[in-house]
Length: 262
Image (cartoon, rainbow, N blue to C red):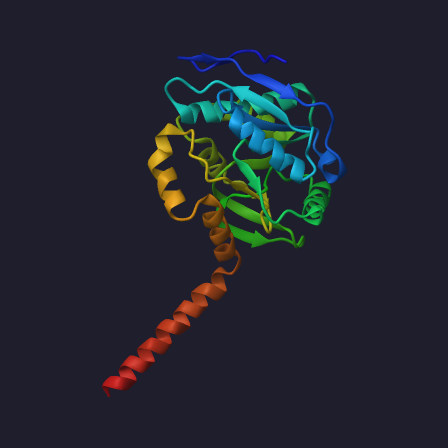
């Protein structure tokens, strides 16, 4: 199907949505629409993404939203692509939607985790955004073992949102020169959550965001976003223990040092 043109003020691009026959099964059926953003030129990524979706029970349930790369600002193109998915979801009267980027990879996936996530969403209708994997500044446990409240830092390759949140993001947060995940970070909302342990990661494929290619190379030098994301998750989960252990180690070193010079 063809979607109407997106006005970028200085450039126009046309996006195409390709929906495979079938729908989400099991707990995934909680979501009314599931989208995956992909550049038209990256058929290779779509092949990989389809295999990833099939492995977690989403075969035939994801609609690929194909977009042209923004001619001058890839970050703006990414921003508008996410907003496009939200507009498509609202046009389809979706109450809840899932949005992926085509470099998503799944790890540690468990149907029980997804069922726990859905249970949380059913019982807490005030949630706004729910990440299946990201980097966070801070996290707090909830009464649901597989759900944490997060204070978002970056990465938006796999997340869910409600129709109300999508409408607010479309109406009140047009492109303003801020990256999409930075915009989510700046929402300052208490109703943003994440799955624990996370199951969605970004692959080590080279980024299509031209502005962050040096950072992308550095991330891959550090072992890739998957390793960085897991390290961030571990640190946030056990931050007090890690800080406490380091303080005790420094105290022990200090005691040994001063004991030795006496």
